[in-house]
Amino acid sequence: MIEEVQRHSVHTLVFRSLKRTHDVFISNQGMLPPVDETAEKIRKAVKARDTYGSVLDRVKLNAQKPQQQLAIMNGASDNQPLAITDGSVPVEMASVVPPVGSAPGSMAVSTTGSGGSGQQILAPRKAPTMPKPKWHPPWKLYRVIAGHLGWVRCVAVEPGNEWFATGANDKIIKIWDLASGRLKVSLTGHVGNVRGLAVSSRHPYLFSCGEDRMVKCWDLEYNKVIRQYHGHLSAVYTLALHPSIDVLITAGRDCTARVWDMRTKANVHTLVGHTNTIASVISQVAEPQVITGSHDNTIRLWDLAAGKSRCTLTNHKKSIRSVVFHPTLYMFASASPDNIKQWMCPEGKFIQNLSGHNAIVNCLAVNPEGVLVSGGDNGTIHCWDWRTGYNFQRLQAPVQPGSMDNESGIFSMIFDQSGSRLITTEADKTIKIYKEDDTATEETHPINWRPEILKRRKY
Image (cartoon, rainbow, N blue to C red; front, side, top):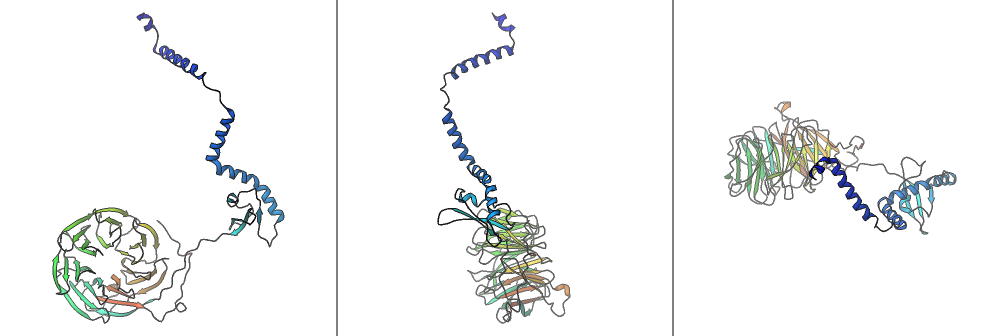
């Protein structure tokens, strides 16, 4: 018996097993109930309507189109709008496809009359248009303040709008009266160029940073340094205060942004990720609470609670030297030699490019009226309408007598708290204050609006 089993091959055994299985199942198939053809047709019809209903309606509509077009061509006159009234055509589908022979800029609109029938009328399609920019009065220079002995690198305005502070390459911080432009006090203590200033809105404190790696907190009641924040490994170029909590953010040439507890001087977070100098840092209450712009061509949005980067924006092709929040909108702008770009918070969605300031843009400022101002390394100032990106004015800052023409660079700028005065700090060792021209009107300075030039380039 064993020898007989061994004579059969594996294929023969597999075939016999399959045949047995087939015989078992074929016997069970013979016991199934007969198929109800009517029920099967209904099931297929319901499934087809559920899955392909819109397509089936479109096919029926296309089948009726030749008769509708013939009626249009025979019954329409030159001075009457083309109209089709057919109660058998669904109103929803009548507005999908315009009849053949209609004007290329027309669009089919369906209406329902009192009788309940669908009516299709050819209406002109509106061409896409860009919104017209808001008119802003031009800005003019009305005051030049001299007093520093080096390039004036930074400026900050006091929340009460009574004075402003400037820092320069002469290692001195000077506080000026905003109304008269007179010097109130000079603060000495830095041993390197002063690169950043910020005035607290919740405390009588002024914060400064410089190329000496020092971050100082000045008590303005005594005009003395009361705290210093140690930790940066190289020059500190920028700083920002959180609007609602006692937190200070500083950044600079060591490619890191550091978050400090204002009172205890503790280094709460070290924000690591940039690969080159961080030139600008800003802070707001809403997310993202910290945004940095760097010479590595990227902008990073930071999660302040976790101390980690939540998003990196790589749209810029050149170094970013300034980032600024809009005072009322949930947006911010960034400046680079390739473009000024606008972004939407919190995820950093790109909005539009502002092209035309062909210079190394060192600084940006925005006021509540929607005026965005950019300052270049060649002394040029461009004024933009925030919403449309329209460049409504271009200025060339005059060089102080005795300075060379190449000392016309603008290093920082800021609007005062009212948004009616613009303060710039420049390479000719002066501070210039601009204000709106009260004599200008829309007739004397019209908007030269040509939308075809301002097509938004998104990349």
